[in-house]
Image (cartoon, rainbow, N blue to C red):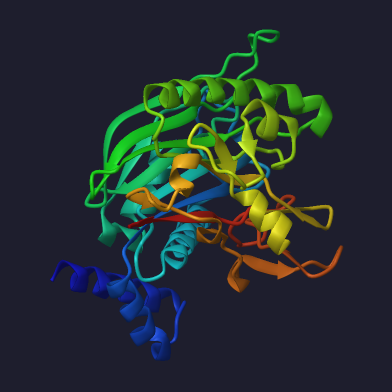
Length: 354
């Protein structure tokens, strides 16, 4: 009965957004009923601000009298666009966990889960204000009948050579799936490349080292830990911060439960995909990294290279007149309201039970 109720809700939501045709309903429904998996998605939603002035944040750009004339109608369009993306990523089974970045505060997260059609799914929120000067944070949404948090921590970042510098915390959440598997989930948004990739790289290396220390403590406590690291690292899988400091391997031979593996590199190297387009080139800034334990099929909960995805659907893209092909359909182009979604594409991974 509960599954039927969930299917009805998702069917209703899909028809609202015209994301599927009636002909595909039966096939989608059969897939939903016959396959159980745990889906985790991450989405950089690009500047989801409320419309109110916060004197402690540099949010002036996104105010009704700011340079982008951010107002209630644009805000509502933005949160409903995000809702549409979440529903589409979920298919006939909404994502169990959603990591988000570039959100201003808890208010905008509540806007997504309470004041869009997602309200019918009862997502819960984990969020803590970070010290980022623009006021943008990371957050996590979860379905409480699929995941039970038992602990969470906002991991602060300190820059030894620049104590005044601020950036987003790393959000760490530990919890159980409905089958009592323990998951360690990290939602990231590393410092930007403002000023140049090489010039800004030391900032991301510091964040990666903080994250690596936390990972080491988890693995030292339990070698078979299920760790999922996701987020916008503002670096590619081959960059120093990710491959060396964090230690996210891009070679998938001889899997070890002591190691981390960057599954996003597989999408880039083997399938030519990217989550972000810059100067005409698609790249991977939005990562999904897992502990080796999750790549061992003999484990109760596992995943594979084929279970990680970039969600690159037509409605998230528009024609790229400057370069070629298509680019992300953004909310703004410069100061002009474009009515789109984000400058990043969502990424997601499915975990399966043996």
